[in-house]
Amino acid sequence: MNHFNRAAPLILLLLIFWAASLIALEVLPLHNDEGLHLTRAREVWNLHPFWEIRDGKIINHWLIAAFDPHHAPVFVARIATVLISVIGLAAAYAFVRRRFGALPAFMAGVLWITSPYLFFYQRLAFSDAQAGALIVVALCACDRLIQRITLPRALLTGAVLAAAMLFK
Image (cartoon, rainbow, N blue to C red; front, side, top):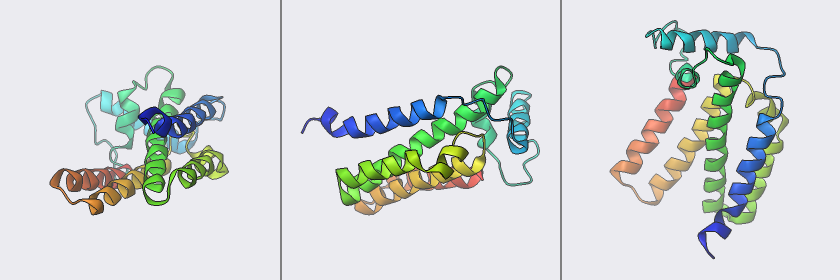
């Protein structure tokens, strides 16, 4: 089987997730927490990357800042969560495919996309959805690490887990 045929189900899932996430992304009113993340992202632009981080959410606003929250702030804040969620979906697919096969991986992706809870939270600029997606990436990295222990794989697993903790 060539690489495209093997990757086609994942590509289809990612495109469906992306399309579903972008539809009316800005319709819901801005939540209080989203406003806080946007304020922190603007402070990153003011060279205060660790402004007001006592609640433990240390780096989630950095991704929002990377997209310049001064223009279309609601879209920018929410698209950052969608991007992390895409990575989480791809990691979940890879993990399930490696452990159980192609059909269970596809079904896991369908469940990820159709879960009302995930659909709601992954469309808002909440650190919960970002940290959750990164935990799935850490799980996938850990699974690869236990298959063959190497220093780069160990460092990647630790870095992703640390990032997940710093997001929440």
